[in-house]
Image (cartoon, rainbow, N blue to C red; front, side, top):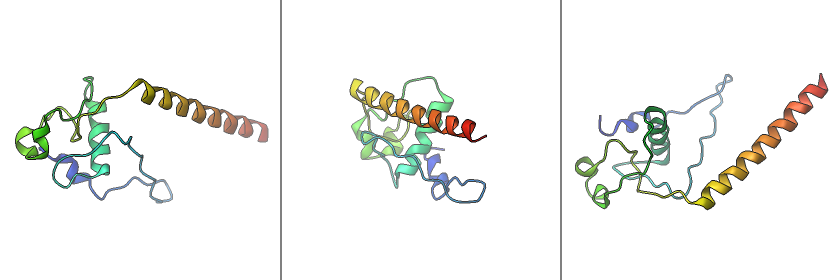
Length: 115
């Protein structure tokens, strides 16, 4: 199905207490393209592309996809405009990972000490 992501619109993940989990925020460089595309459907498409393929994700390289995505769509890529990941993007992500790891370490140490 060409626009399969649309079937997932309106669905949200929830925890065991059935509270809806906050959705991830995509980088500013990722912009959805196509009829009725949303950030949520783009997130589904990117996650699926990462899960099902080892090929790099580049987005839709043809500018014509914005005019008629049903004709110019590269089905091997998610429905987003072409993008480039810079060294600065990678550095910022590495910093975020280190901060989260530090918070996790502190939480685990607090849990161990409380026992």
